[in-house]
Image 1: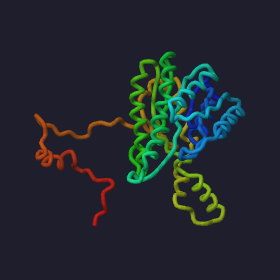
Image 2: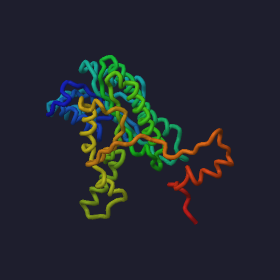
Image 3: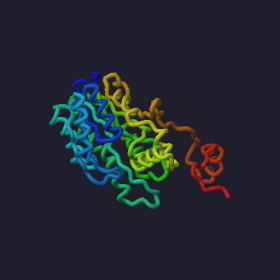
Image 4: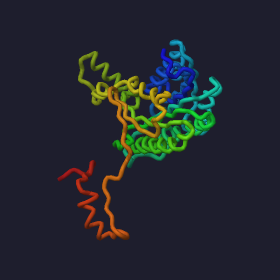
Length: 307
């Protein structure tokens, strides 16, 4: 076990499986005391079970670490408050919050129900706020803290994921603002876009079908190439843990891509082109100038097929 985070207390939401589980294990290995939060729901957010969180806590303890389980939902204000309270009750302090819990309810936007929109927003975007607010009350008082938020490349746009994309890109704006709100109190807030094989990107059914195909020599199922191309959750974790260390005190309000052997810092959006005139533009003027200026070189990424 290391000691980079010795004496620190970390809350990790959605830590019963996938990236969250891997985060919990490595944080513990680096000396942190861990609150393993997981509602124990299915990938679509339905159901509850204590087993996922309990199993991770047992694994940490078996390795000589300290951990407690919490089963509250991040989707409610009360749940978020209880999750942070679990750290204070068990260990007397809180130093790090990793917002990781997530679900999927994929559907094309014209078929998406309000319920499918709402539940994804509640778990991802509300979930980040519900845990971050009470954590920041603690961090402000003690003048220190680390927050690592989990976004996704899907936030940049991904077919059939209007709810998830909106929530995950909302996390980026949330991260930028929390970084500004809390920076003067010695707190940093950053976001990561992990690219990994988890139950949200590679379903258990696809994994099972792929293993059967390998064992029997049958044709691989559609999508099996994803399992080979995406790194496992454990590859996402070292940089997340690094962001929680004292060494990362100058990194604040940033967004990173993590994908196996690649870690990349995203640039912040900047104005690419500008048109200007004295006074207000008219529609006739815009019709004349936009095609050769602002719209020059633009191509519809999802336009109708050419006849």
